[in-house]
Length: 395
Ligand SMILES: *Cc1c(COP(=O)(O)O)cnc(C)c1O
Image 1 (cartoon, rainbow, N blue to C red):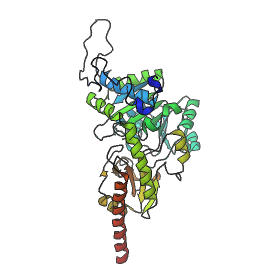
Image 2 (cartoon, rainbow, N blue to C red; image 1 turned 120 degrees about the horizontal axis):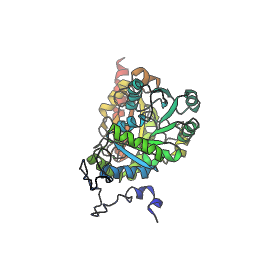
Image 3 (tube, helix red, strand yellow; image 1 turned 60 degrees about the horizontal axis):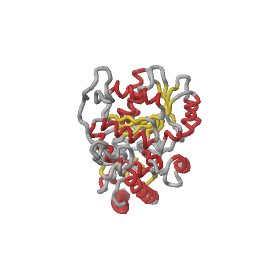
């Protein structure tokens, strides 16, 4: 049995970096050196300066490349550093077609930074392939996909977008932060570059900010490697080690959280004070079948709407277990308010156009017992119901 034949869960542990070949250490050594002695004037070794390559960061880059099924991985100082560096593959005069409920930071990069460098964009609802086709221009060089999307969990057909891109010689970028290679492998579906905020599920413990990129072919690997070294937003070695450690438990964490997410989604859906639940693991989600076809699960993030912003405020103040915070993909459940957090960089009018209401909450389900979370949400909703009753009686 070769390593390539191992199942995903096994490969998280038994990969080429399972032990240090020099000492047998079962954890990747953290190499702090910024520079490396060269033993020959003409022939430099593999490592010369740590921005270009460092053994600890390299271990993480190897591991993520292998898990995503790519030829090469790259580790960056944050998800946004990975995304921004990938965008540097484009030049002035190029055009990118991008999903309309993209991560707020990516929205900001595309609309306020890339525009200054002459890179054009068109936002489209990527779940509507006809809209995507209509957005193509003679200078379209890239398609930017996020699926399931944030925060409305819309599902984009990665295979269909990739083949559309190939037809016109454009690249397909996929932000795979929400599902990770444990559940979805975009390169196998035709994408060219996978991007990650490793701050989220990959590291999983809310204790590191990191970004990753993986590419499918050697030529693209050379171009992105050149940009990583030129722009220089590399991941530090301590942080690379934290991501490597987090990765070992990725499968078990996601499995537990995903199961809990479905249970919580069903609970919320059945509750009279909840307007709407967004989760592609629910069989009445409009893209349920596509999600089943292109991924091994629907992940551990859901969103839901309360009846009003006032109701949301009461609900949030009554909830005890989840942290109320930016971010997702951690051992502890995280309740977020997209309008004021992940999508604060998006003007209100843009948010409303995309259906991101001021009464929408996003929940990233952690490793708690889901029954405790349901009990917690129940009691907060009950309080909300009583408040409403008092208000009605006062009218
Ligand atoms: C958090 C996030 C990012 C940005 O990553 P950082 O590590 O915060 O820079 C990008 N895309 C998605 C989907 C995210 O959730």
